[in-house]
Length: 397
Image 1 (cartoon, rainbow, N blue to C red):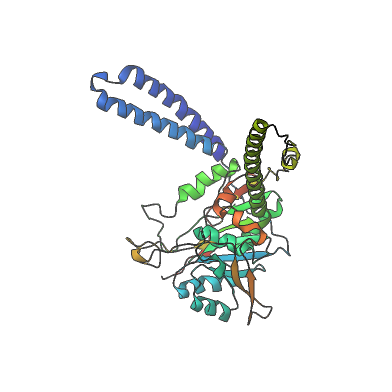
Image 2: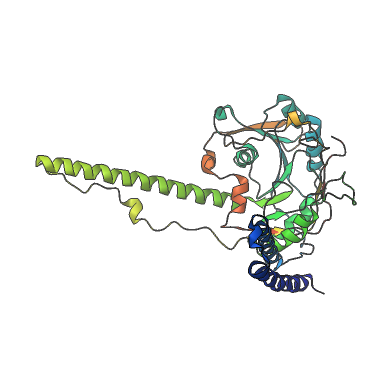
């Protein structure tokens, strides 16, 4: 039987019986003489029914995607590996695996720790290296999202594959994901996260099969599958349009505030001069913004998808550790920026060429964080959801 039909039947039956039960609970079974305990219990049960309704609504449009079509040739892709202070060997293991992805692409290490040793390792492997420029000293950095935003000004790929420092991609990852972008409205494709050192009989659910399965499939049906921070591809055009839209709205709001303040100053000047009998030529006002046509909105029929194919592996951190490779005192700190210093691989991948960009290039300071940008809407996001590995995490920390 169709899974979506089963979900709808179960949701409908649950809500009918649940509402009937809650009405009975509040009207006939609450012990008001012991309200201190009976009322909280009834509230908890009511909340449980509401939660069941919301879960059922999410699953109502469950969408199970099959394999995507083959991607067209000639797409440009930048693979971003974000890092701050993870061990260099671990980062390079991921970077070398990313360089071996079969679809043509450029691999970049986004090092917010600005480590000379990391830069040398990237250059030796013929892998692009991007970090913040000195212009960002003492400025807000916005952690991992800023690190990604910073890299946008130093790269040009149409699509961005984002990986954490210890998330090893399978060579086929781009072939498995780029086909979803044949639909020009798709802006994001998210894949499941998969830990290589977690067994199938794990009772803690560390692979998050419920989230990356039915929940994301349900959100996909509502065109609301969302970016989980890694093992996902984003269409650059969609991301930049969101940033530009936010920038324009911010400028408009600032100018409007300035005009209001100017109006108050002019009104006060008129009052003061009227008391002296002098004539003030006016009204003085900049009306360009007020008479301007409404700003053009960006496309609103965008798609997000949950890809069913697991395309990366990672290690589940041991108990008490804050990451797969560090003890709690060494918790990684993510950073971000707009200006950058980058080293791009040359054609023969044996040397590197420095790239530089200043803060403000491409309007970066006003761009939103990647997470908030991807989850906002002019664009729609898409996600498939059946596990089928394409990335893996390092076998050892």
